[in-house]
Amino acid sequence: MVLEGVTAFWNFIVKQDSIWWQIAIAGLIFLFALAMKGLFTRFLFIIISRLTQKTKTDFNRATLEAFEGPIKNFIIALGVYFALGVYFALNYLPLPPVVMVFVTNLFRSAVIIFIAKGFYNMAGGKAYDRFSEKLNFDQSLSLFASKALRVIIIALAIVIIVQEWNYDISGLVAGLGLGGLAISLAARDSVANIFGGVIIILDKPFAVGDWIMTPSVEGTVEEMSLRSTRVRTFANALVAIPNAVLANEAITNWTRMHKRRVSFHLGVTYTTPRQKLQTCVNRIKDLLENHPEVHPDLIMVRFEQFAGSSLDIFIYFFTKTKVWAEFLAVREEINFKIMEILEQEGVSIAFPSRSVYFENRLETETGGTENSR
Image (cartoon, rainbow, N blue to C red; front, side, top):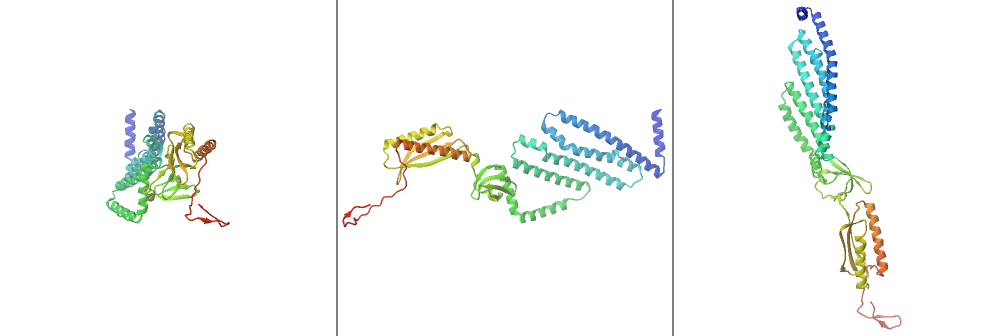
């Protein structure tokens, strides 16, 4: 009985020919769909929130968060197209087919935009961060890849939307190719810097905060971009080096050394007895081997050579600390202790000197002669 009553009521509505009656029916469909849209949206987001809470991995949760906004917009568009009566009401009213084609293309374009927006959010959101952390991406490489993915997503979305509206994109692609060639020729230096930045990011010769030295500059890396690298020198000046230049230079990364080297010659006077010299060598070596701040891997203290004005002791070792200020303090302490050893042994440090001999005798003020040198 109820079904027959609903059928009879629907047949009565359909048989009405008044345009105002049809508009009223379309309006009722619109209001009904609006009410259903709110309930459907609320119900769907309750399910999504529960799935997000139950998801154990951060990547899945971040993916749902990236698509949360686009899904909400998609539901609204779906409500406009179906629930709000844009589809049913326009088909019920006597409107031309071209209007329906336009509305359909508009709806499908909106769906493409919402999907692209979700992937766009993933390419630069928490989901991408979790993915890059799992693959141990460098920060600069991760940022570059994120920007590149976003550009690709936008370009693909535009191409698909243009095709959806039945436009031929072959001419557009050819024009973009010629335009890209012209731009690349005009901006070849910038392109070279970008490729240099990519090479630096992939090779990872340094990171932000590292102390580097190149033939062009020495200092601490403050910022890395695709075009240039900014280095803060020890004079507190900021130097921007094009990546194309930096990628072709030898780069010394002092921050990545495991220990700091100390190497010098200690010259003592030629009047130093052999036994005293041997004692000094042994005591200096014993000092370095027992010092808590000296790295034990390689310690060399040797009487190396007979120099022009001194007997040279070669001293070579490494400090455990890499920090410059601490390194200087350790080296200073060791130098003072070496001086103490020399003082205790009665050995003097030599200074550069030269003896000059005269072949002829020099006359003195008294009229005599003597050999001089």
